[in-house]
Image (cartoon, rainbow, N blue to C red; front, side, top):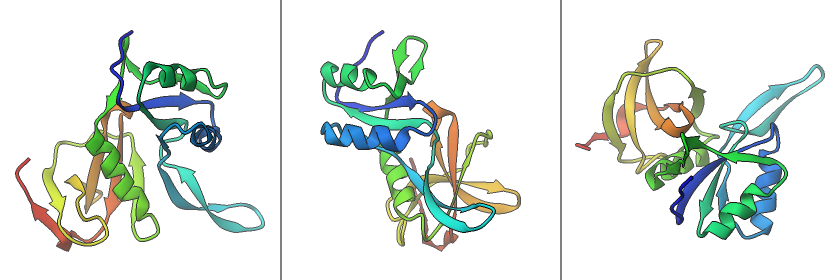
Length: 172
């Protein structure tokens, strides 16, 4: 196993422990990011909006040193770091930035997480509006144009349905 510190990594937690782990890491002053989406949950007697994790059982951690790596791993609810082979996967800063931009605006936009494979779309940067600065792709989903943010290390995609008038095509 090899790990280079100073970067974002992904840990896999026990089911439904993401918020507890994030809160505990915050008390330990370990930088973490739990992307959530506001969804309507229905029970037999009521409906309620809740903040649900966008990627169930996954939590993003910013590691500054190896000591932090082992402190996070020693938590009871943390099962392991996401790896490719024996290599711990490092998440690019722009992916974290894109996820933050999308999740901060959950009340204004429709977010969907998909496991499906999408052919590469046209790369764009949103120039104006609530998602200003988001670098994404435009793909066709069920006859509708949506913005796609790829989270490759989790093999997931975030689909965002918003108006195309805020796009400015750029060469990436």
